[in-house]
Image (cartoon, rainbow, N blue to C red; front, side, top):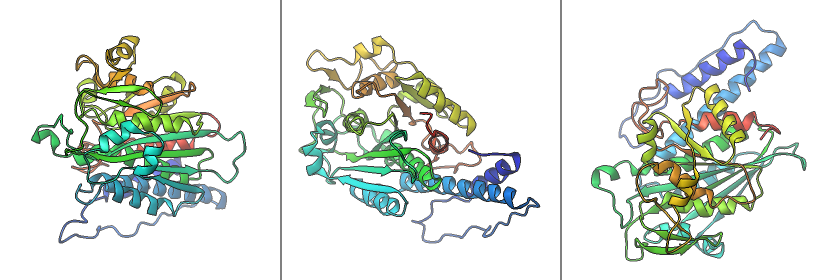
Length: 390
């Protein structure tokens, strides 16, 4: 939360400086250091006011640096970032955060968890899948402390599998792990800002490759929750990873779940390339996310999950199928599919960031090209201000 006008001013200036200086240049043979090296703030506020301003500055720095950390992950090329290296990078960074426990599930552990939908996406990959499970507990936690879970889709590259993408659509598929990067960046920001709630962050990491063992269209696979899924399109893979991750997350007994994913191209058709799609099963949670998006001046719009969409993703050969009968309403039908893996009536929100994860150069605080970092600030705002109000 940001207090008075002066604190807001300092917060905004700090964010602006850190966002606009961002450049992903680690693979350039020559890179220039930022022209602006030091910024000093002067105030005639007395000690009490100065402490509030200092806190606003520090929190802005934590959030902006977390956004930029997420941008770096998304911008990494796929020959450097894969499920194994991404898990290691996040583990290394998270190990520096106070109050955070880290658990990483490898392929054997995922098999033991019966996360067969997740594993079906990884079947053609050279790299082993990883489920990164981070848990933050605030210092003053009690039995009444609320618990929120973030879940992120982390497809480090998506060829489409046997339902292969055309070459033009395959370029930039390194961005298909932006959901996991966004979820972790928001988690990181909230932890550094000493959020007053318990937060779990669960990331499903793999790529979707083609090989002799890759999943074939028409396959039927049993998910962690026991439901069978007919996989009609291997390019609708993110929802398969998320399905098992969501079921796993429900077993952590959170008070609410928010998943983040570059899930559908259909969200661009519905909302354009500038707006995050919001869907879910709880209007109270949806409103709070919309309010946080508004507070951070980020675009978010709610799409409906109607009963007809829920019927449309039922299969004659299995419990579910991973695509609907037509391409219309594709984003909400994907969300309807995910809803089958939410149990115990847990409030859940699904954020489809496929349109906004990159290419937001029209915004002055985003790079002209590459990862945008959008929605990290919205989620961080919600997590930091959610004390007991989930």
